[in-house]
Image 1 (cartoon, rainbow, N blue to C red):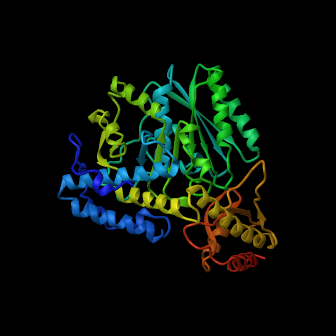
Image 2: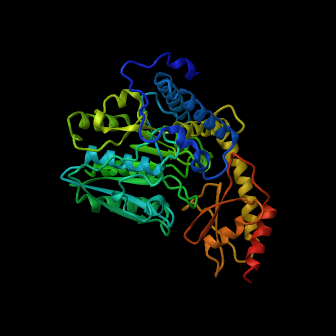
Image 3: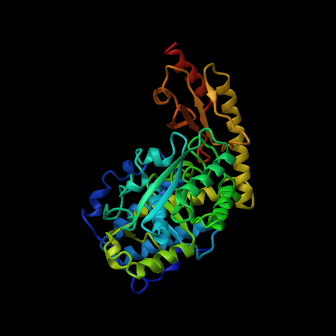
Length: 462
């Protein structure tokens, strides 16, 4: 078993110390907890995160100890993530400030490796509340120069841009609306978009596809992976990035096992179903993709680029290969990464069974039973229309979406629900849908209270 306290006896030769930049970190902690969370996480997550804050405070005047602490905790975090995802030790695991930042890094990295002739395209999807149109505030993802979210507790954080596109590349973007498409139709739409945008293979691109959408719909990432291989066989160079920010913690073990076996890059975040803090994410890359990118940098392709790499974002053997001018005067924020690691660890061991696969089956069966109770109760309320799972549009059990009758807007209805007793957890609305969640890391409030509250809210405008 990995022991982070014994893994690094001293700081490896050549390792740069944790840099100090801007306002001293002691002054950044005054509102750290309030800015780092979107909900009250469990003690299993919040406790270690606060311990990380205290550890960094102790080490501020001892650069060698602080650097050793960073190396140990980052390495241990990568160890647990590789265990969860069944990755080899050689698979690169990269940390970032948010899921948005990781997705931008992955797509632009692909552009640096594969773009030819100054052109590159991205294909994304939308169902009325997906990441690109919503979290990026409706802007074309190719126009984003920095992440939407930034860690409030970053160690002397320097808010510089994420990895820029190659200076000679003019990217284009295609968004596929998936609301009316079955999964089979989605696969076909992706292939058609790739053929069209690539102009017969003359232009390269990447596909960013969520594994699970905000309404809980499970998209066919394995079928899409096979379609991408078919496209490559026809001369269409399309990189495949899986966005599992909504899906991690909601599906079975097999669906996320060794993700780089079916995609080029895989992204997940700390919050959502894992129950961690908001601002932390993980990007898993195919090793050959990262190697190709680093070789381009080593040949001088980014001589004029701004600093975009945070210290400890990449593993030491990769960070050492970046030229100094690309390194920010700051490091990734360790409390959020520690919280993400602990959320992963708790998720891995949650449930009954000898293996992770068995424990996931136990947990999914439990959540499915809870979902059935909620759906049956909601369906008995006049005017409520529940989104149901179908073979063509399967849903994860832990997300329940329903439409409310006119004249209610989903956001107004959700706000009215939250003003009363604790109910099954509501989250951001998606189009006309109000969304409820059944988190595995805390007990579900009373279904009777939920139904009583909904009926009361509906009656207030009758």
